[in-house]
Amino acid sequence: MSFSRVVRGLALAAGLLSSVAQAQYPDKPIRFIVPFPPGGAVDVLGRVSAKLISDATHQSVVVDNVAGAGGAIGSKIAAQANPDGYTLLMGSTSSLSINPLYQKVGYDPVKDFTPIALVASVPHVLVVDPALPVNTLQEFIAYAKARPGKLNFASSGPGTPHHVAGEMLNQLAGVNLVHVPYKGTAPALVDVMSGQVSVMSVEILAAAPQVLAGKVRAIGIAADQRSPLLPNVPTTGEAGLKGFEVTSWYGVVAPAGIPATVAKRLSAAVSQGLTSPEAVEKLKTLGARPVGGTPDQFHTFLQSENQKWGKVMTASNISNK
Image (cartoon, rainbow, N blue to C red):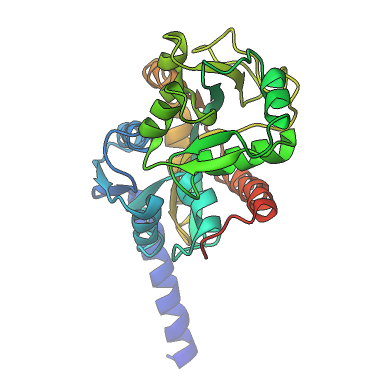
């Protein structure tokens, strides 16, 4: 037998073994990395996603919280994992869009991952100090324009979605709000309630209880439709500020190079699972909108998000690289 025939035979055998392995996938537990601590939105939606995959594949999906550096530590571990479908990552606006643009994270959010499925999006809401003499978004913009550099906006830290959203507000509204970073969403929101800070763009789940209690005033939902959590609050577009749409999104990704058949199977598991009454109700309590879709759709979405926030950050000179 010639050497070339031996090589072709070995290649064919390897291909057959790979096909068999993919057909049997998954035949062992799947590691699902959540790059943030337990209890937050990324963790909660990560566990929802893990259950959807486990239910569909009849295999254990083990959630592993690897927190630190705004999601960068766990995300880097996932990016460097074997692309065999047995390591997945719960990606988010922070870890796959804004943080990699803000600082060196050791991975490329587009090149180093294969998108599986966009799980959900949670709209932000603009909330202001209730002592301010404004009731609408346009009144706030006029008030801020009359006081350039005198009002401030809160964030959960430099290079976070709240920070970049505040800079987007500056750009689109033509105002000059000063950034005040905090170590987390909760303390930032507390200082808006107490009047230490004027405004914040924050996930609706965190803000809605305070809005309903009258502790902060909501002046616009930063999305293309109103939220059932605050149905009387207009969208920012309805309130006259076009283009200010900010959502915290969450999606499942895998290391780049995962077999296409495995990616499609996982995507179908998540997307179909999101239509179940249990998943719909769970997301509703979080103020989240189920999304789903194909890997290609998620890939396109991720690219568009990175372009959108990249422009905002460049215009505002936000970078720690």
